Image (cartoon, rainbow, N blue to C red):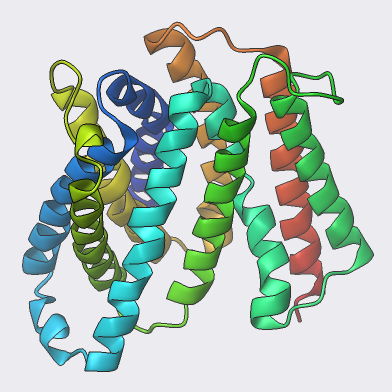
Amino acid sequence: MISKHKVYLYTAFSILFWAGSASAFKMALTVLTPLMLLWSSALISLTVMTLFLLWQGQIRQLRALSIREWAALLALGILNPFLYYIILFKAYALLPGQVAMSLNYLWPVVLALLSVPVLGHKLKARNLLAITLSFTGALIIATRGEMVAIEGISGPGVALALASTLVWALYWLLSARIQVTATVKLFTGFLSGGILTLLYGFFMLDEMLPATGVPWGAMLYVGVLEMGVTFFLWLKALQLADSAAQIGNLIYLTPFLSLLFLALFLHEPIHGSTLTGLLVIIGGILAQQYWSGKESP
């Protein structure tokens, strides 16, 4: 019984912290450039990962990695955090938080599509129907329900938000092939991602300096919680749960709570089209998961 309570406690904190990410991104990006936010938060997150490695006694696992494994893990850092977050932050800088956040939840749909060429999976007609449903939800959000044109919303921002889902889905597929602990994957990723961001910053010095002050609260939230601690809380919840299905669908409460936080903390008016589109996206994802489960032996 205690273990069950812990499962839902870890899950609740994961949902809460990830739900606050969109608000933290928008707050930080009012002062910092996407590049500066990525570098500072990646550095903070790397510190968090190092502490977790020491706490879990996994430093020896780094020494045990082969050169090939090191190369593969460091290369993953190009996708996440470097490309994923620089694209995502640029999307948030151009879009209302509710739009960038909602479109980012298409990544499970993109993952299903990428699994066809990468893993050789086959999609049946009902899978394609669920995918089409989710993309219809994205269209509702991007066009604010007009369904014919993007008006009042940055087209490049929408493209970047969609591109971030592609990068994250590709990262997820490739990282699943490397058999090391999640802590080691995250540490090496943020190590190479942080270095890449710094090197890139040398060529973009004007983007590495804050316009006014430093939004420490939002920056620490992104580095410590969004990129760091929350992953471990979620992994702990999955480890303690009887099955992933026990808590898996609860994570879809996150975007709706995120909309509430955007309205409360940033006073961002939430459009009915955003809520409708998000419901359609999540509905398509859940349908895809249900049908995939029905097909499993």
